Length: 114
Length: 116
Image 1: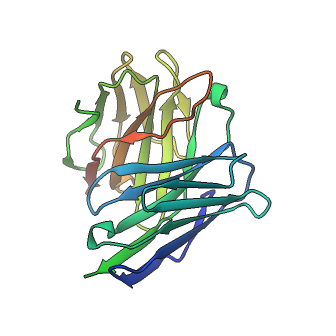
Image 2 (image 1 turned 90 degrees about the vertical axis):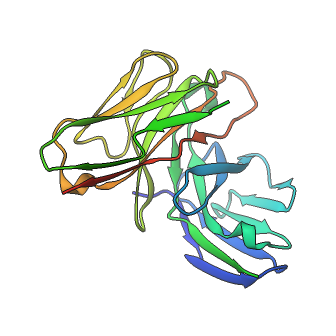
Image 3 (image 1 turned 45 degrees about the vertical axis):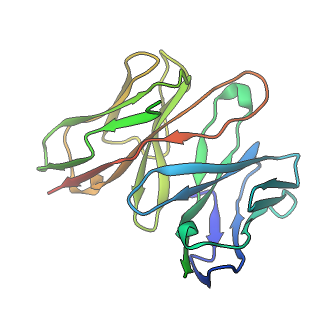
């Protein structure tokens, strides 16, 4: 069963707008990660947030984590057509020394229109 | 730096045939993983290898076997392919450390497998 559920399943915006994607999960986590997948390609790691962190930034990306609500959000600011892709959240419930195993959500398909 | 390399990129099999999907990484990563991706299902873990010499089942291991040949290579074998194994298969690797910081995964570009 999938650990993460993402919302919305699909999002279409205009270039320059912000895009927000949400992820909810069911069990306790060690860290949560976001990945991007362009059509027909492999996944690319975007950002990792640890369970004791609440917010993290990387360029135009902002990730928040609320462990009390078991949810995370990914904000892409000033979106570009090149941001068009599927975005996946993935949770890692294990201790770092026990071996990582990521569980993925079903993804959000983001379309940025020029 | 090639990262994670998967071969082949495409394959069509007949039901009952066998094949091995190859994966190699050149980043000296300890952990390697095999996922399958089906429409609307996200990625599901088939098998993983936390370090050279160890392998463990993931969420959907039935119908598959794996071999961690050495630190670089982690292969996935389908002994008797079934139409339900039609999917896109991704190999990934990760630097496994005993201490912080945490690391993300590096994915290959995938193998698109069709079983007819």
